[in-house]
Image (cartoon, rainbow, N blue to C red; front, side, top):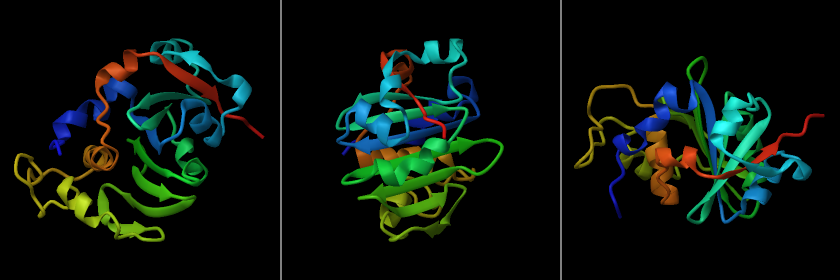
Length: 197
């Protein structure tokens, strides 16, 4: 297995890339259309869109972007984290992970399987976990650098800085085998607009 480090995912935590508030959901084995509709997008709203079109059109308030990467579909919500609330629906009969970043509130890592939240925590305080099996990912959390005293060769897990979203992204990459690179923002994606009651 390739060692994934914070440096591999650090671009996502740079506010100049996707902003100060965002959420990623990784859905295993789902196509883009199904992942979007499970996350609350209206099927009739699904269309091709690039990240630049989303941002230039100021469409991000209710629009999710989706991109298939390996065996997972990645959903991106910019300037919000409502998609994390749909994680149980997204994970029906599969696995799904949400990582949200919010510079003005709490961050979140959540792992769901078969419609149940299994392990959830704020990456700043990974010792306080909840879900049906909050300790399921403990070993992987340690190797991802979420517990500073765990350490691992080739990583700076003991750099003295607070744990956070970067380590949650490393954990996600270790579970999914998907390491997102900045060029995903330049690639064609599929968009869906969330339905409002």
